[in-house]
Length: 99
Image (cartoon, rainbow, N blue to C red):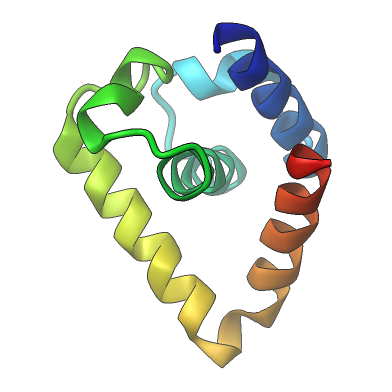
């Protein structure tokens, strides 16, 4: 499982033009936060991770409450028409990962 998550981190790093190591660093840079949010949403939604399991894979996330916050924020983005670009970006990432 560890290698598949590394592949997802690398893919998102390319999409958001960040480094793979940024996932495990504490930072408030918008592209890093958005990439983490995509990863969290994918892990919970597509790979059936529990909220409490995600911090084991993303070192900058320290507890399940943070995971829940990002997951529900991403759910909100996926529902709102104003965030159409986010939906498209996430669906492209999801399709890449599920091929």
